[in-house]
Length: 274
Image 1 (cartoon, rainbow, N blue to C red):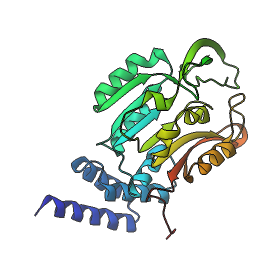
Image 2: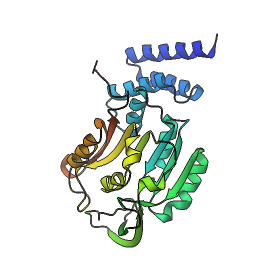
Image 3: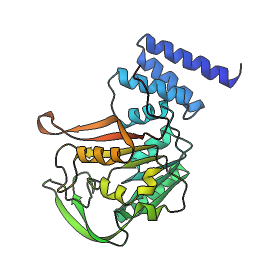
């Protein structure tokens, strides 16, 4: 029996397990398939189906749903890489992709270089992105129990102590000039997502999918809220498709999440629901 037939049979078995609501067994079957055939779209689509049925709405589920729609990025941009956890997750879903991690914090360089080496076919550039290359800006770095997560051009509205660094911005288009198109762009830069995109119109124009951290409430002083980000990307040909990793504050109030957008110029936007 050929490997292709073996995979077909395993996929069929996983489908039957899902129909029987035996999701744990189906998950194990699909993980075995992905170990043998990393990034197999049919397996990722079935894993996305399990996530929907069980109400999972994390980043991994969102990336699997993108793969199930046919996204197979050759090049991925991880903007706001921090310590590389998202790049590792993206590698598990899209094993063949080249990943460029971009991080503003120079102190994260050694950690990210090690993660790039571990992942393979991944690289790091330390740069503070913005709408204009050479512009001096002030970077706000909070001191939290979780480290320096939350670093941004826009001060976080929290009681944590913070320090500032004087830095110089670089446009995204200048940083990646001459490189192949990036099919998937992820941005998690604490309210500065639009600033980054304004410096990368050419990079954005060739993307098939964009993942952006959005805020419903004013989490960072002066940063645009979700409605502005959705409108900005809509005007540039991107349709919001999904919503993952919702974060809730006191009283269960939703204040942040990651929004997934698809280019209307791509073939990825579904033309029907069922």
